[in-house]
Image (cartoon, rainbow over all chains, first blue to last red):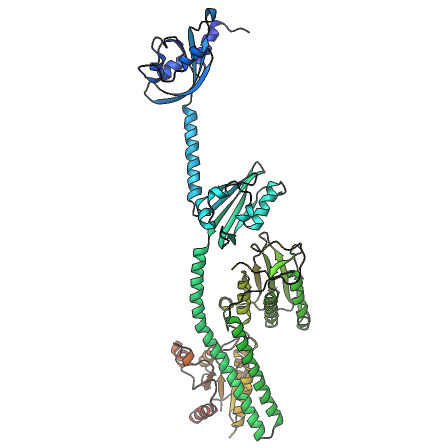
Length: 501
Length: 138
């Protein structure tokens, strides 16, 4: 279909572009309405004046080039609207051939770039804003793209980990900057193995290694980045916990000093009672001697033996727990360990008519722990649980529930729960204090204190939930994040692996 | 004269044995309890002429038991000798004699003995109390 002249005229006037036709002297011979409205240009004036308000031809003139090279040209220019505002535009020029190959005119078709420039500027500003946010965040931020390469490594990350962004960007060694389980998740997700549509790694306390090999305590949270359900990268945020840890240490120190006073008082109390027991023994022996009562003498002797034993145990405990110890870690099977401890208590539980229920997590294979320490802790908790049941006269049926769990973040936990007598808030608060006991002569007041110390030495924590009359639940949580990958799921003979100091 | 009956309350079994033996040797009749709760039961049951009371015990402390005794019209006249391992030298700022009677205007115990026990002092303290005070139940 051929367009009529009128139709071309309509198109010429209304096309969303500026159109002007100029002759060899750069004089506009024809222009559309759009051009006239925006630039205020008129037929009869030079194009440089119309477009840019210039007195002479532009230094780089596209029209001149088009006449000379006889072919279309394109360029981005800045002009001036009739209101005097700057206007960016993209201009195409094309020769209009006349008779005998002569070029009497050049047509200029320009597109308004104001909106595009505005959007570009907006985008640039928003990108700069985001970059500023990322760069100036007090958190370390590391992001990787879909091919697993580091694309963001902000200033805080540089400061905390000691790397320069320039040496890290593009690297694919994620395990250097991310906790092991998170980098594993990323690799799986990027390889398409991760099924979950949204994957977030909950904030947790862990350690990262700095460039110099130092273990930096951080609070880390990570997230897979997805677009329409397919992974496009991942990002990790972390806070340097070193200042906080310093404060914690100071607080701990102060608490420890206060505890020393308490400990001395508790110690004196215990020792005075033991001395009284010794004196009682001496008294009984003398009385037996005087009255020739052999059984009284025997009783006295037993009292002395018992109290000497108590004093020596107390002294041994004090010495071993006042020392700072490095736990001897080995690859062990926590499930087996719990079963062993449970077996030791089965007979006692049966006699006391307490049901022992054991639930081990099959996902929990081997872990890097101190078997001797865990054994002491579990024994303490289980024996406490039995005492708590025995001290509770109200319930007919008592049971103790023991279980192991492996968590998302690779940490593991041991739980000991009983439906015994439970604890008041007052007791719960003092629970882990040295020489605190609710068992009178039956307890040393060291059990939970020691348990907590052992767990803390392994980098873990112990928590308790309790309700008077209903029971208590102790939970030991042990992180495994920073340990090496276990040797092919096989527990070998004790391996002396020590964490970097 | 019928012999006086003394109730010894202490959570340390050896201390309990020692004190009952010592007091029986002095010609007193004794009975014993291993904590505050059992102590209260025994006081009502046995109606002792005097109570030797430890302070720090499970279930119910000696302090609490003492307060209950002094608030009970039936029991408030039974003399009490506190026998405790708490002592001023290692408990700075806490004077238990003061502590016991300062609060709620409860009178101080008739006697106060620190562990390790000086036999002479304990015997004299108890004898002195009986000399001054007739048996509240007779």
